[in-house]
Length: 340
Ligand SMILES: [Fe+2]
Ligand SMILES: [Fe+2]
Image (cartoon, rainbow, N blue to C red; front, side, top):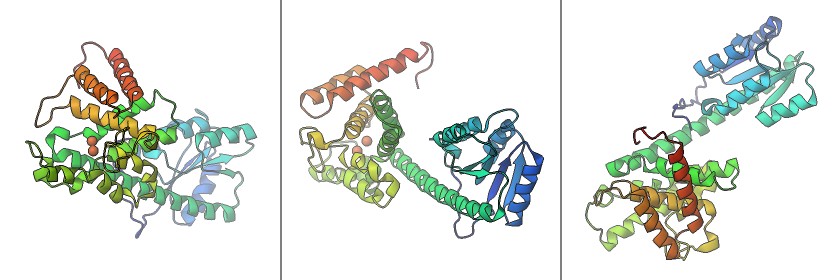
């Protein structure tokens, strides 16, 4: 996910929606501009693919009309570039088609086109579609903003303890390294990444005196900390987009033999994505400095997690994949690059 901060959407007083028209024919651009401006939209126009991408990067619009064939690049490649950029992946794109073949349309669908508009346009048809697509963009903005706020909150919670700053982001990174070596589809990877980012959100309810205590915890204090998977799940439950990530938040301290918390779940009831995040979580905790001990070496961490695997707590295959993934990253890192 890009660090670009989504603008806060303002559904109550919606600003004028901005529409970008990308077509090399000035007459098409003029017609669309006239129709859309007449309905109160702010319209910008460009005639080439490169100008379109530059403009979208500089000031992402709320909707793009994109010609299939531009002088410098195909509409397909522009669409692909828009979808590849996190800041514009949900931007509605309507492809303008004259004599598009069905292969060209199928390709556009595969790349994530939102809609097609055949030239010449019928204004009666055009404007209701524009209204609903602009509304779709507002929903997307609200969704992005809500998710951004939760990620910020999760980071803030990590940062309460200087020793755990960046923990959730690193856990997400390790988990993805492992999962990419296994057979997961893109949606599952996204759900797992969200679960990893939010896995300790429930620590918001743990008082500083307990969370930051340098010495050993009392049984009561341990009980308070051990509530964080349940608290996190309850906080996130109202967000529909997070629903599939909730098992990771709730079960990341469970063990395969049922000796973990909060529910004592075991074996097949712990999905592979949960097992991956669990190992990633422990690995990051062991290899970073904590108030009660310095960071352990990677090898010591593998040994300790290996002991847990032999005890029946954690998934040995996940540990092997983590070791392989880390070794691969290391082999790709130039020898004199500084440690990060
Ligand atoms: Fe946790
Ligand atoms: Fe954690």
